[in-house]
Figure 1 (cartoon, rainbow, N blue to C red):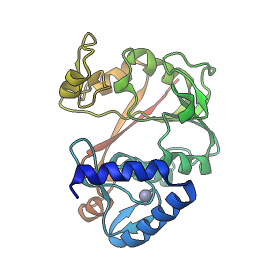
Figure 2 (cartoon, rainbow, N blue to C red):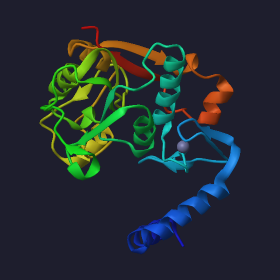
Figure 3 (cartoon, rainbow, N blue to C red):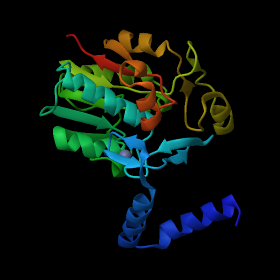
Length: 255
Ligand SMILES: [Zn+2]
């Protein structure tokens, strides 16, 4: 069976199998992949390999246990490090999760008074547009909004909104795909194939460069960049499998 036929069969099975059977299959697969070569700090389990993932498939990208990708694992390592050093609050406050990633949602729910939003209400606790949020100013101690802004035409408004609802002294993880130094953006481009070619995905409206940090500062954030080499040794980087990521960008709000 070729790879396409195998993928098609997997999708059909996904649709027809009842949820308890799917959960059992997933648990069995996780067991067969247990090992020590790789470690996921999000679900705190070891595996002999991670799944490959991406439009251009990256080997050992996705944790079989919780579905975390490189960026989730590196963010989690950075948050734990900052918490250990008492540089950010350990929890107990309110956390806003935008377009929630299930692997992180589970972790944040354990530590924070947790609220999730998405433009599509089926994907979160509430339906909401981040360019026009209904929350009061200074509502949240923490915000996680990863890989969202590259989908939003008026990203400046979205960033200002995120900054508005963050409490002074709070922290925000606002991740985007970054390539090069200067953001590539032409909002007149609507053809999905052209967007895929230019921005890496059919529903992205730009490819951010490192000037993304300047955009965050313009919106009112205080920005710090934490290099993965400050968080993990060479062996740990391989074991956690974070080759795709270089740093974690975390935002604060001074006032
Ligand atoms: Zn995991």
